[in-house]
Amino acid sequence: HGELFGAERLADCGGAPHSSLYTGSPWVEPVLEMFEEISDAGLKAHAPYTVNPMPLDLYSVGQDPVKRNMMLDTYPLQGRLIQVHTRLGARSLDSWGCACYVPEVGNTAGPGTVVSWAESSAVNYGNSVLGMRINRMATGMEVLCAIAGKVPVFGVLTDEGRKAKWHIDVRLSKEPHWGALGGAVGTKVVEQIPYVTGVDQWLTLKEDGSVDGTTMGKLKAFGSATASSGAVGLYHMENITPEAIANGRDQLADGYQTYVIDDAEYERVLSTFNNRWLDPDGDPTAVYIGCPHNTYDEILYWSQKIDKAIKASRQEKLAIPVIMACSILVRNRLLDEHPVLLRDVRRAGVRFTTICTPAFQGLKGMADIDRGVTNSNKARYYSRLRLFGDDDLLEIAMTGKIPA
Amino acid sequence: MAKTTFKGRVVLPGKVSGRATVSRQAFNTSGSYMENMFAGRTDAAPCTDASNEELFGTDLSGAILCTPTTVGSTMGGMCLMGMKAIGVGPQALLFSKPIDTLAAAGVLMADIWKDQRIVTIDMLGDEFLETVNTGDPISIHDDGTVEVG
Figure 1 (cartoon, rainbow over the protein chains, first blue to last red):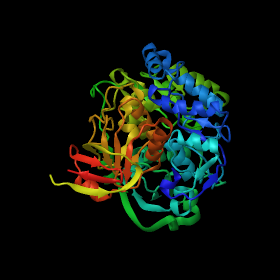
Figure 2: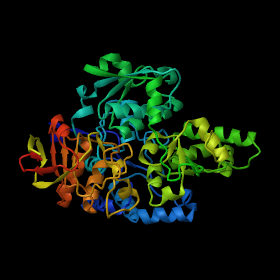
Figure 3: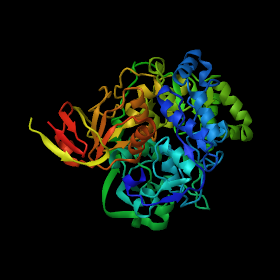
Figure 4: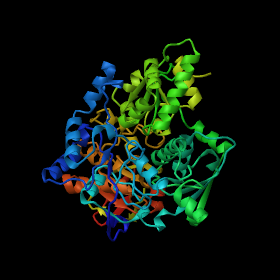
């Protein structure tokens, strides 16, 4: 595999692996058989590792018997998948989630650390924001490399391979939807590395140079969309990401191209996001927040926003449920720090879940019964969900109607 | 139409003949097989990537897929392996650019662990995708030669 990309040697992995082998569908069986054979031989990953979200949640979104059966029908091999990950050294299920790098899950490593990760959004965040060195690894290959404890050296594992071939010159008059901006970038640069300027006024670093919780959510939304609309494994953002801070525009490769995103271009991109509901004039049935999984700051932000709106209204409950996707460890922090808020928003109709939103939306028959809206451009790309800004999503949750 | 010949790098050799299925934009593997990956479909593989105007709705079963590269979720490589296993995967992948890490892993894992070959040639050049159209007769040879027409 590495030789196809010019690798001449292997590097030892640091940190801990992250796997995107998470769906126990029949088509995954060849990969399960491969790892069952490996675990039968007594091999394990070089360190306890995290895994993408469970694609089924029988306690939250699975309260609905129709949807519960859809999940059980689609993932008959989920038990085998959990067993093989357990044998290979995966961490416990409460840490399973696509945003493995959030502090509550804590699968991170220092800048420059080489790790074996899959999950496009996690690879993108680890490379870009944390300065780790991670090639985009396919599901399955990341576990093979985790067992070896080594990865081939090519691409973004090298200094030269981290240079940006595109300058993304953002000239917007107001803060964008970060997922929509990322989608525009991914569509343009495809697999190449962008260097983004003109956005740092909307982002905040802490005194130690790391991003604050709000900025983490924005960069997660931006990066995950570059990786789903394209194949971006690394981006640099002027004055924000570590290599852009260290090297400035020297991080741009010779002969780079430029893509200007001004208000007109941004509006053009938004206009391509079509309504793909099977009943395009129907009313929305659910609001999906968090793809990739929410950070703690995001679930706190949304809980406070919803709680304030409910208490300012005469409603006891939201008109339609809000599906809030995060790992159990992230939700537990809200339980620890804001137990009354968590109680109140759950009573209002917020359903905390560990689900993977695109996997849930893709279930057979889901499009016939669900007309969902979301804050995630990644989820929009992979499903029929419609993308809206935060204030519109709140209004939709409160009224059950699309804003005029 | 007259035959046009291209020569690429052999990733996995083999002889395949059939009709081309062309995506001039990068092929989003996970986005294209959503009905098979998450809705359990095994009788066909209608392309589910709505942003791919060339292929959206086209049955990808047994395709000789011609595209610059693959993009999207890291499940894409395993998806190629899994689709092959359930009988709706591509017969061959023909890339104008160097193969990407996801597709490479998928075809290699399928070949090495499951003896299921997806003939794969990369670096066929931009002119290849400027020439080939969906439905064109196409022949792939062991040495990485691809004949269109």
